[in-house]
Length: 424
Image (cartoon, rainbow, N blue to C red; front, side, top):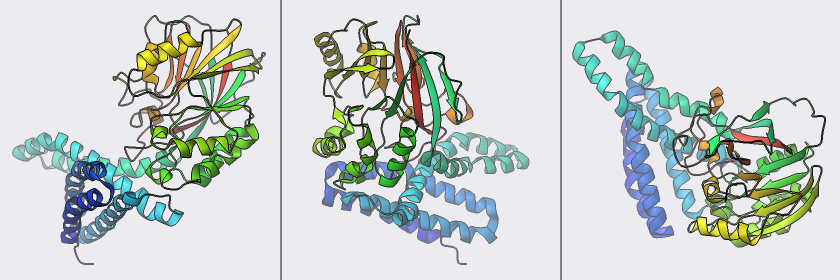
């Protein structure tokens, strides 16, 4: 097989220049700039990875490496070009173009950072003529490729869990992560008293990583666990989902059986196509709460459910006004649906018993798959995933039913959990 490195480099250059120009002309300035920035972040690293892999496998394997990189570069170009007129595609396109193209973008972005970080060691080992160390380093340089290949499985699967959240217990004065009782892939022993069984669906992001049928199957499996309530906390679409009218309504069809027990709020992306989202919710009997409350009778007694609309600005004023306008009702558990957990910091102390959020995709890149809580958001302002407490108030941040933006989940699997709320 001939060495196709020249073709890979040519395709990379043509894509880097031509695709943003095409996107700008056909879809506008914003997507043109977005695609240019994305390619600038990923292609230098991809080119460097192709060079390092080819050098690692030697002359005999270099031709095969270049052929694989050519195919991945083509998939990336076609994926980004298709987003100019985005719509949901069939499985052949998803598996042949979208998944490998997005994984390649992630590998290039991570690879560039990783190779730059290792460059001082390469220069040092070369100057000292440490051949064994250089050989080991050359294998280590390929870690981004292995990581992204493995993360495709993480991006496609959800982890079945049962989460128990106990209310009424004292917690830290300032917002902090607290332990949560979590049972994965097995049912816990039943409690001797009633709990409120809640299924949360958040950030499904109907698109290349979340087909209509896949989301239907996920919902069906969650409903099979017989929750008392199903609560949807926003961000239902991607560019592809927005370009396919009616697809979200079809994906939500299993929820029709929970009409009267299913409530939703908007996330930030839902405001990009509010009519489509409203239609998908209403035809399936899902009640949208736009800064509203509902009073419900549940197995743990009376529940006051409040749904907060997403606000990008003046969040503090919005949430304080909402909770003041809808005060706590006596002898009710007070539960708040809040898409972005960052806004929880503005909830008055002790005003809400439990808040359910999403938005962060669990941090999306981290060590959760290894049993550790750390993610790239751990040191940020955002509560990334799991259970947080401030006084007697609890915040649960769901890792997400899907994801959007950065093209892979790395070490942070999506979540398919049943929450058992234990009253205080």
